[in-house]
Amino acid sequence: MNEQITQADLTADQHLMVGGVDTLALAQKYQTPLYVYDTGAIRQEINAFKAVFDANDVPYQISYASKAFAAVAMYQIAAQEGIHCDVVSGGEMYTAKQAGFPMDRISFHGNNKSIDELTQALDYGVGCIMVDNFYEMQLLTDLTNQREQTVQVMLRVAPGISAHTHDYISTGQEDSKFGFDLNSGQADEAVKLAQAAPYLDLIGIHCHIGSQIFELDGFKMIVDKLVTIFARWQTTLGFYPRVMNVGGGFGVKYTSEDQPLLPTEFVDAIVKETIAQTKAQKVPMLEIWIEPGRSLVATAGMTLYTLGASKDIPGIRKYLAVDGGMGDNIRPALYDAKYEAVLAKNPTLPSKEVVSIAGKYCESGDMLIWNQKLPATQPGDVLAVLDTGAYGYSMASNYNRNPRPAVVFCENGHDQLVVQRETFADLTRLDVPLVTPEKIEN
Ligand SMILES: *Cc1c(COP(=O)(O)O)cnc(C)c1O
Image (tube, helix red, strand yellow):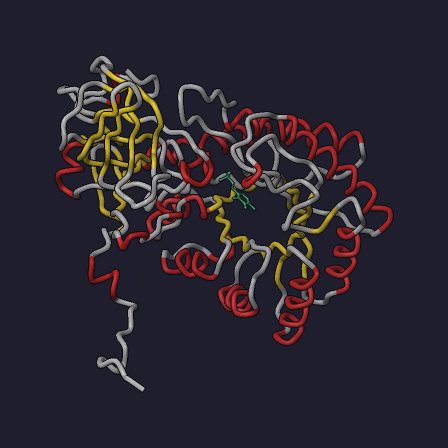
């Protein structure tokens, strides 16, 4: 049996469960492909983070990086758990507002926020805008001056530290499109500009060094680097940041080969390093903010598919095709991300063969899983691809004009539809037919 599954995840008939609900019943009720979440598991992850901060008795804030999975119901869960949320676009900000999420607990990120988006953030009264660059600093200074409206800001800095992870998802090194460079003095200049702007309330400094990080070193290095700079800024600029935001990126276990630290181990290390460094460098203790995205939702979610065609190339490979693929999970094609699948009707059956799971999209690269062991399967069997809760739905597309799947939340044996399945009518809803149906010959 897949080591991520335990007997507690199975019904009496050995069907895979999610949040206490039988996945075969879910596939029947809502059709496939289907994203399903155990929302109890999301709450547990949030509470595990809170517990580490509380045990260390330090001021903190947890801000869910909602790009990992954004939907009205997800913002509602974050609101119920009393945490903050990061948004990175007008659309995410709008969705959070539609969910009734408290806007003063929103942080607005992005390296090219438009005037419209900044105006929207000020209209909504978002809690904090993460200023990324000099252009944005000027836009926001002008806007807040015109409106005579104060807004809290943090500066995003690029600390020149790279986490050991995939190039496309590492963002903390100097050569990055994000943030004010620390080493060349750009960040000092940005602090001065924010201090001089009458309506910008500079509460702290933010950095985010990457995603799916498996080691503590990167986080310890950014704490050391930031606290050292804060000590210098106290004397050179009279600037005492109240908040140090170290971003997210805590690695999660997608396959049995991944051996990440517990997300809470990262936080414990960050907190202890911050306490030690602030003492040593005579910097007042900082409020520590973290921005977990993936680690809150990845392993809480899975995708249910129905098996269809198969192709066995003797001596080469056996392909099993599912009714979804790169349109609902682009990560294998985009990042070479790895997943594991189990047969929903009985994950405990002994493996019979090595198969590769293909999608239904017209691309050879539309593969979800290469070479994993599975029991014997038949067309119509439900396959559960595990740990798809982060960057699955949120990166979904209508490629090949496939409607995007529905999303269902499960908790304590109850299921609730939270995003409807798209229909064909949704696919043409925004299309505008030609005004002249006849071709005009000249
Ligand atoms: C993407 C992102 C995060 C979350 O990263 P995860 O790997 O999902 O934890 C946090 N902060 C910022 C600024 C981000 O861009």
